[in-house]
Amino acid sequence: MATPLTSYQRGLFLLLGVATFFEGYDFMALAQVLPNLRADLGLSPFGAGVLFAVVNAGTVVAWPLVRVADRWGRKRVLVITIAGYTLMTLISGFAPDVYTFGAAQFFARVFLIGEWAVSMVYAAEAFPADRRGHVIGVLQAFSSMGAIVCAGVTPLLLQAEYGWRTVYFVGVIPLVLLAWARRGLQESPRFAEVAAAPKAKGSFFAIFRGPHRRRVLQLGLIWFLTYACSNTAISFWKEFAVGDRGMTDGQVGACLTIAAVGSLPLVFLSGKLLDRFGRRAGAVGIFLATIGGVWFAYTLESRWALTVALTFGVFGVSAVLPVLNAFTTELFPTHARGEAFAWSNNLLGRPGYVLAPLLVGALAEAHGWGAAVRPTVLGPLVALALILWWMPETAGRELEETAGQ
Image 1: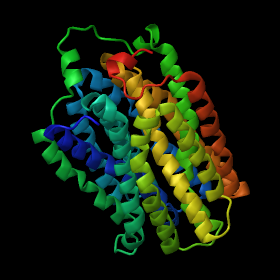
Image 2: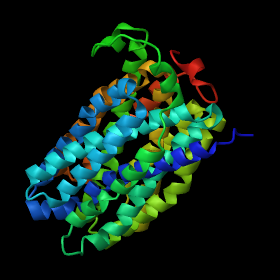
Image 3: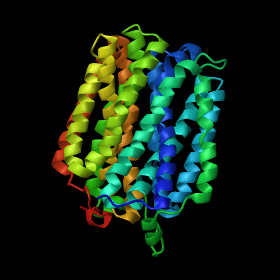
Image 4: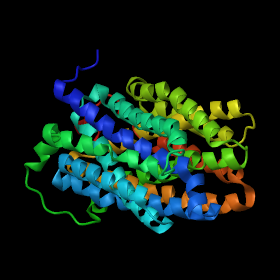
């Protein structure tokens, strides 16, 4: 029987879930408004790829916020990132040109990914070992719910007076969350224990002079290869559906909503499966679903067949994150967990998030969106092979046991 959660853990679970909800909303927002934004601001397909690359560069620059969580604490950084994301999203809605929009979204991603990463670290440290994978998986499902809401409401919001800008005005809702978070949020118990011990200030490259260098580099490569596919798969699907398959905004919104809703039960179950069958076995099923879903979502002709493939693609793109979040939070000690996550995910992994849209945007101008996106599935294929080769099993074990393996 699973360890029951305390009342505070249930409240924390809800708080982190609402925070990650907006990570999913923001991720889907740019993909949903891109054709309308391109028409309004005069962007070419390559320009769209450049815009995505600039915005996604913010996910790399988020590393100081994640790293500093090892010194400032998880609570303080979480509150700062939610406030920063809210402000930058509001500025995005008022942006008069593509440069202001790109800059605002760049900083929005800095805060948003900082919030997401710290939420995953928080979850790993604050919940029982036998429920850790389930909690991380369900938190990622909240992100998928954010994507569902965005996909469902965007066609309606695009018809409002302010068009695509309205999608970003809705994103200021985290202000309500921030006000509540300051009252009830407590520091991670594991961090509080470690923070009480004196420690020397570490340099930027300190983690590479210790025993964790090899594991950081391994996870960084796996994150890089995974992001090269997962970011472009959903980001450019509306462009593919409208440009290559002749769909309307409403039809695309319906397809994305159906795919997101259909994938949601699977995403909710993914964390529980990671706890029951293990991280490695779960990775096999999830990564294979990602590869097949993305390939066929950019290959098939029928709208309904595309929707089915997209369902598996959305599931895979969402569910690979709990797998990698589990490994990245479980294989390092508490005093270095934030720094290791920052290096593995942000500095080493996120460049794949940035470079892939540039390459796909350039290829799309010459060959179309389908031919440009399909080859990216090689990324998760190689990543899966590396997981099975390098990663130990961590399911059901306390962090003190798995750290440093």
